[in-house]
Image 1 (spheres, rainbow, N blue to C red):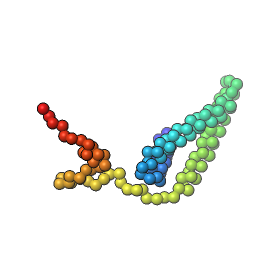
Image 2: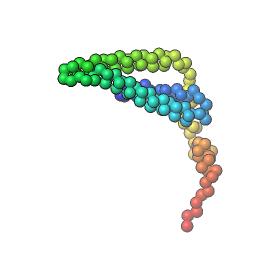
Image 3: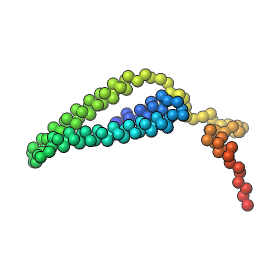
Amino acid sequence: MGIGSGLTQMTTTIAQNSVEQRDIGTASGAVTLLRTVGGSIGVAVFGTVYASHTAGLAGAALQEGAARATSVIFLLVAGVSALGVTAALAINETPLRGSAIGPTPTATSTAPISDTEAVLNRHHEPATLR
């Protein structure tokens, strides 16, 4: 679970760095949607394979059918993984845009740290305590 999950997280970074900054949310959402749909389809396909190999069996035959189904499912997963590795190797490597961390503020600096802080400072009036 951990290895597979870690390998899929790279797609989010790739998607976010391949679009304009204003489209990062859309790209991230699309990756999440496609990952979820792909997982759902995968579970349905593998469940169908398992059910087709074990339908109507009992006892020792059920165990043999389950073993065959598991073997077929692992072969299918290996094939899908090979396609994923091939696709990953085909991606052109480009440097990331840069750091998400802005400049470090100094004690004498009065400039806002981020765009969010600039917006908050522009629309925020200090509250008077009574």
